[in-house]
Amino acid sequence: MNRIITLDEFIIRGQNTYTDATGHLTRLLRDIGIAAKIVNREVNKAGLVNILGIAGSDNASGDDVQKLDIFANQVFIDCLNNGGECCGIASEELEDFVQLDPVKNKEAEYTVVMDPLDGSSNIDVNVSVGTIFGIYKRKSDVSGPCDIGDFLQKGTELVASGYVLYGTSTILVYSTGNGVNGFTLDPSIGEFCLSHPDMKIPKTGNYYSVNQGYYLKFDLEMRRYIDHCSDSNLRLRYIGSMVSDLHRIMFQGGIFLYPNTRKYVDGKLRLLYECNPMSFIIEQAGGTAINTKLERILDLDVMDIHQRSTIVIGSPDMVAEMVKFVERYSAVSI
Ligand code: P6P
Image 1: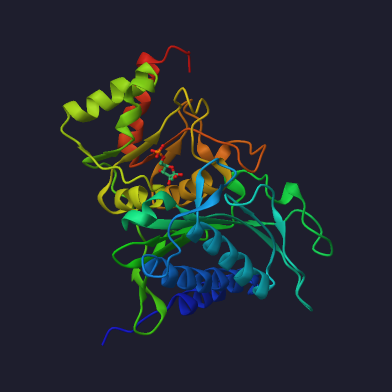
Image 2: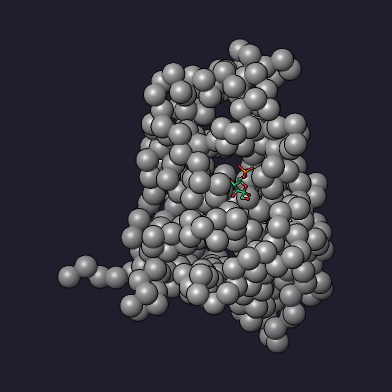
């Protein structure tokens, strides 16, 4: 009989392989798993409890905030606050980072960056949404409050990152820097169970993922590459949820692009809590993640919590091919 390995069990086993593991990261990952289960419950009934619709405010990204965004953001804050392992959170839904309350006899060693409900415009039409999270070791002293320097860290400094996809099933995918593993939620027991051990992205694929509607607003090199994808009979898949689009690429291979446009001259996606955590995962699975200046995403300096970045991410052979188009057609010498 196949033995079910729950997320908790897997995390604890992973802790046991590190001699200096203290259990703090283990508890933090478990807190994230709890929050994901709570958010999943509400996402699955969003159409029933009148929490659809725009809450009337907008977030730091200027997106209309859906009520479920607010709920998801608060759930992660509450779960991480209770756990006592995290000293502060930076979120797409918050203008500035939030200090968490110290928990008695706990030293909060980590900070969390997150997009609590990525692709939330899909909620009302019952299309997949996701959570993106990244975990950093704080740089400030554990005896005091966290500060902005605990968040403005390069992607290479990430201790762990992951995403939750609330789709036809709910899957949590994460890495602590030693490969990528996926856990599918079994609602009958309320546990995330190891379903996709040691995930590796295909070296190439037949899908490209970009908002074709902006084609005429892209730079020449991007338009030429997109023409090449079309001429090569690649299939365009774009859901408008980074987590969903990249999860497909993790399994089937492909390339996801969000270049600069006239509206988003630095790209739309956020470096800290979208591009870096997803790039960490994709690199750990054998993929590549760069910006349209051909710089590695994880190496980019993070100067602001809501800093935007262009991104080209996915199967290594496909990103390498796209690089050739930039080198050939870019008006700016790369
Ligand atoms: P557009 C969702 O709002 C998001 O941040 C990503 O999840 C997604 O890939 C992108 O923006 C979609 O943006 O401009 O194509 O609607």
